[in-house]
Length: 114
Length: 115
Image 1 (cartoon, rainbow over the protein chains, first blue to last red):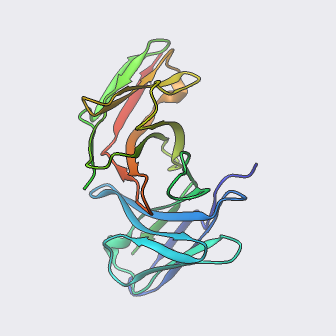
Image 2 (cartoon, rainbow over the protein chains, first blue to last red):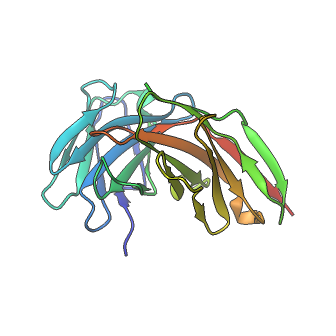
Image 3 (spheres, chains in turn purple, yellow):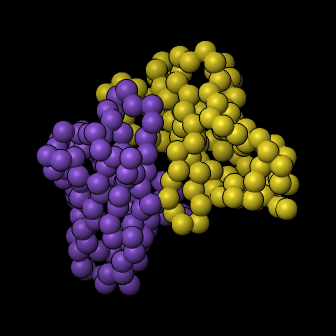
């Protein structure tokens, strides 16, 4: 059974650019969540999608957005990148948000903004 | 609001010994889940073990067990027979089970296993 797949694994962007990260959940999982991990702030919740609808959102500016497709794959986008957006972005997959007792993460996407 | 506290920034253990990583939590939810994850330097967050708030028995998964003390609001991870490959960051997390709730993480404990 394939795990959670995130692409790209590493990327370097320049301030002001935008970036799109992709996440393919485990087959059959319908809930996808995104988290940002930085040394200073730790792990912070960005948003969660279930059945193509955003169900929950963290405290991030509007530059951070996401979407989910009918096959449950999800993308997140960060526009007008700032140096502080440099982080590890983790995607989490579960069957159903409210009852899932196993939440699996991908390997993450390491974003560096220069 | 939910909160996870991990008071041990770093822990050292010798190979083949057992180690306990501490985790306390705070929540007003009656139904919640507690999770432990391992994060090696590669960045991947590896799911280790889960404990539901209504589970009467402590969860176990191979060498991992969760010492759940509901009245004390603690969910300590016990790793038996430590291996060199256990060296990593360990995160305790929780989530309420009503509606769509996020995982709330602790600050993590860095475990170093020595030969």
